[in-house]
Image (cartoon, rainbow, N blue to C red; front, top):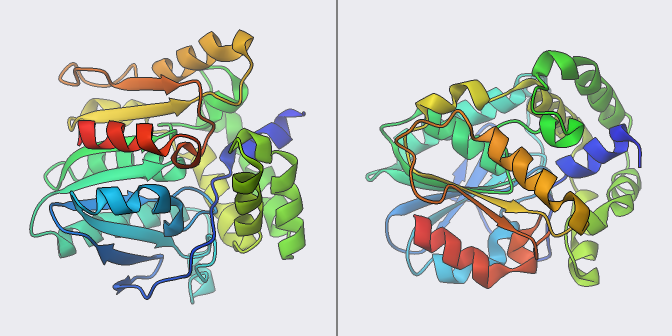
Length: 300
């Protein structure tokens, strides 16, 4: 598998098969469905996913928290933004800012955040920018900066990935059919979920996403590095790493890469910040939902 394609499959975060629900909030870049009772919990899906990705956890979490289930416009079955000028580089920063505004506008209490993949990255970005409104956060296999996982070099920086980011943007802009998106994901779907059923869900959902929105998201993930901002992340963080798709001889290296991403966290972060799950692939909510629920509830 070449490096360009490996980067592509590592970036993908997709989902499943439940019917859509009417949104309680309809913003420029995302919608939100609210359910459950308790303190507010923002749930952010990953790249090419919508809120249905949380379905294996949703019923249990809703007994503890008021769930604010985000669906990003252009991912999964959620239609892309109405204004095409919003689909441009810098989109990820705009999404993070709008999510922060949502927290301020809709919270009578401070928020907790759980994010998967790109959603985990956004959870960290939002917490850094809104320290007075976010209590704690869990990142489900989402990194402060994705590129070192691809390059396997902790020294990788956005400048090193500039050409790759433009290549990925152009590549996605060339994928104009559902069949094209599905074919790309199908080639690397074994990295995302263990069972055939869940792999089919991943492929089917990817075909519904908007290629232009996915392209700017991938570009921006490669050009936005949160590691130097981690000293400002004072709220308790738990990063859950999924290495179940890797062979035994790569497990130690993968764990080290996760740990290196967190080196700039402030000394006030204590307890077990990183937990590696060798039995789970990227969609931990499919492979190990009971364990994931326990980690989320235990941390938040």
